[in-house]
Amino acid sequence: MRQSQLFTKTRREAPADETSKNAQLLIRGGYIHKEIAGVYSYLPLGLNVIKKIENIIREEMNAIGGIEMKTSVFQNKEIWEKSNRWDDNVVDNWFKTKLKNGGEVGLSFTNEEAYSNILKQYVSSYKDLPVYPYDFKEIFRNEARSKSGILRGREFYWKALYSFSKDETEHLKFYTKATEAYKNVFNRVGIGDKTYVTYASGGTFSKFSHEFQTVCDAGEDVIYFDEENKQAVNKELWDDPLSKDLLQTLNMDISLVKQKKAIEVGNIFTLGTKFSEPFDLKYKNEKGEETLVFMGSYGIGLGRLMGTIVELLSDDNGIVWPKEVSPFAVHLVRLGDNTETISFADKLYADLQKKNIEVLYDDRDLRAGEKFADSDLIGIPVRFVVSDKTVAENKVEVKKRTEGESELMLAEEALKIL
RNA sequence: CGGGGUGUAGUGUAACGGCUAACAUUCCUGAUUUGGGAUCAGGCGACUCAGGGUUCGAAUCCCUGCACCCCGACCA
Image 1: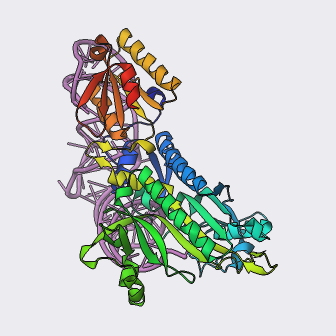
Image 2: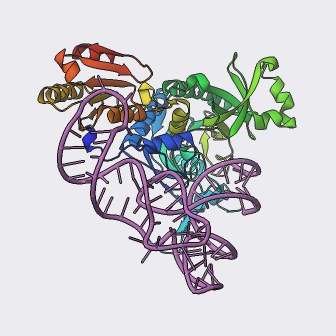
């Protein structure tokens, strides 16, 4: 897109009411707009990043058998009463509202009930299982204290997948696959090296749940981790005297263990029959016996993930997006406004579009310094500069966001870099 | 929800209880510039979060509310 048509502008200074690095950089770059505490709108650039992340997650979920759908935001009170999670004394961060006829509805804060209830309509035989539906969705939680920019909001966008398996064995097979898929996601968005599969407290049906914790000072969790063996344990679990025996089964090398703050970018959980029981979600096995479905849940917060990437990958000049989540593949920056330069840049812009390469074209008549500062702040990984100087040699200047040096090359060569 | 802090042009800041609320930036006009947020000249833009009180006089002091930030609790 042409930058002259992008209505957002960069700012020199971050608003005084944002102290987190992610919010400061994202607001300065024109990625997000704060509505109220913990609630942000995603501007064109920000939406591009969310879409990139969404697609990576979608690909990885589909690869392990996930089926995308969309559950409603408004939730039926009766459904939630079945699992005893409607009562404000049980769940205190519901957003609830009233219908004209006086009935009450809630705004989803999670999805187990909706999925269990829907699947009950369709699952009746062992032939119907396993099944792995998921959705991307806005989630609402009336947090007592939202914080850290987009890391912990009252409204946020997440992916939630639920696994419905015949039994624990089948469940565990998928659970392992999901763990690998999650690792792929975090590797692809560029934070894999700092993200640990972390043991956390489980529930009735398993000793542990697993969190994907990314080591980062902005995090609100503390993990104990063994860098060598890529193992980690959440502090809550580590400190719990009841779990001492369990921890010994993990064969972590205590001498290598470090303690650091971390951001929970994803988690996976064995639910067992916790929800299939209240919803009477059963199937007939080969012998015709009624059997409870065995469930698991798998979540990733997309906004939080985007914020984590910014926290980790930025420098004094701005954001440094990894290739896979950058709002554009290349930032084409035109310097100067003489006719030859403009037509050279316009042609390059058209060529890039023809090749389906996503390009942000800075066609504004501004001074070089301002354009470079904007470009660094926005953080697209590759920059093409076209100016009178480069056009005289019929070349393009190519610079990576992570590198200080640039290189002059022919347009065809430059395209190959992307 | 407990504790602490802060609310002043779009943004960042200043202003002793006292003159027309100042400066920078953004934006608009013009000139000179044109490879790392240029320079000069001019201009627009604020009933100082809301409501009440003290005072001859309040952005400034007091009370109430609201909003935002931070620490803690919570995070099924």
